[in-house]
Length: 155
Image 1 (tube, rainbow, N blue to C red):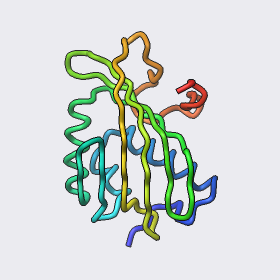
Image 2: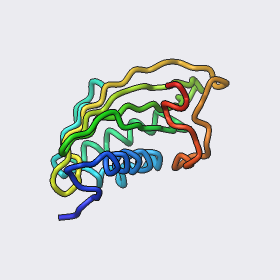
Image 3: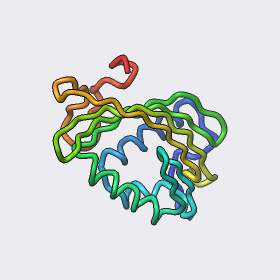
Image 4: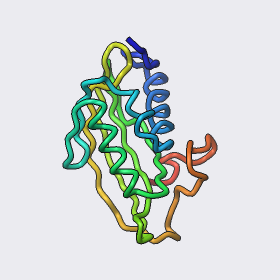
C-alpha cells in the first residue's frame, strides 16, 4: 500500500502540511496526479455532484478544469483531529467567455491510516468578479510561498 505522508493522527503542523500538499496538487490541474492522494474507493460530495472511486474523481476533475480556466486555489486549515481535517478554500477561474468567479468553500476530509483521503465533502459558493478584482494572479501552478493566504487577503 502506498503511503501519503503526513499520516494521521495529525498534529497542527502535519495538518497544515497536508493542506498545503493538497493545494499544491490541485494547482497542477492534473486529475490523475490529484487522484493519487485518495483511496481507490474514495467517496466525494462536490457541490451537488457525487463521485466514488478514483476513476469517477478523475472524470469529475477533468470536467471541472475543462470549464474552470486559469484556475488558482488557496486552502487554509480550519480544524483537525485524529484522522480528519477541515479546510476552507477559495479559488478563482474564468469560463470560456472570460467571465471570472471567485469560489469559496469548506471541505471536510477523512483519511485512512496510509494518509490517503477516503472521504471528501465540499460545499462551494460562487461569486462573479471582475477580472480587475482578482486576488490570485500568480503564474499557473503552485502558489508562491510569499503569496498571501486567505486570512492575509481578508477572505
